[in-house]
Length: 377
Image 1: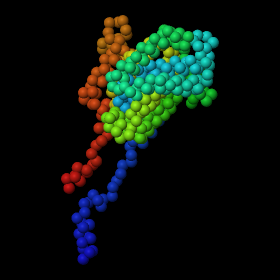
Image 2: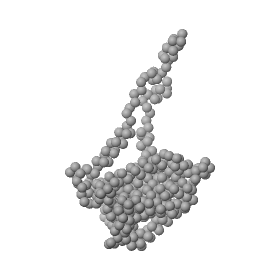
Image 3: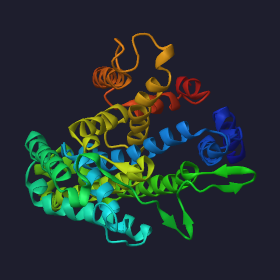
Image 4: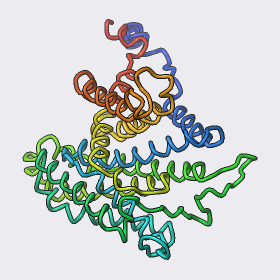
């Protein structure tokens, strides 16, 4: 009798339960491996323009990740991100230059100068962190906006350190006996100049910064930061030290900006005060909004979009309508780029509040084959 009941139950069981499951190999690791191989091979095939454009995008991505930790994950508006990029860029120059001719310098090893420049950016953020720990929203945004004006005044007037209006030259980076200057190094019959060598240094720095930020967001600090962003009073009630977390994230964001400033200085090979103005801070805000607030991939995607767009318009201004060189009657490439990513910000806010990464996530999520049929049964 029991055998008959067992056989009947087996016959009534869904066929899908008895059918062996065929799992597809995971596609994400393959995509990551293909992307890594592509990025490593690009310096062998791209010219200097595209390599420099990619380096600008890497530096922008590092700075955008730091701002996204502060604004996207913690909900703290900052308008002074460009100030900390300037601290990193000029700090590296001061520490690494020998100071024999031109502005002052300490003549330290370049790798140590880069580390100290990032540390000084963090110290500058730490000096401002008591204010950042107590203000929020537009009040913090206005307070950080003052940093831009203070920074511009110092950069233009402290000529012994910054070189004034004309800026100062950037010493090349030297790491593990390799100098990232214009002297060519031949690898597999391909000459590697400064852009090619800096490509790999920037790539390692970007990956390290992205992985660290990803770990922060996925761990306990990330949950506390999101709780502060969503409801600071409730976060304080459950035991999250709100002011301390806000101050700590502000310091971390400043260090990310300092690292981005060092990489930007190495790519530009000359620092000028005009670059580190309020426009740069607004561009970083556009990056994290377009890419996706609170997301490390979103910061990278938004940085690539905002940083590459002006260079692409400049490169192909002859073939584009209404875009021409400055002073020739059309719209300058820089102005056209600002119009376009301004329109992109409006479009993202209206139609895709989660940013471009949310669109990619929606495209990846598809119903499994047979899932709908199984539910109907």
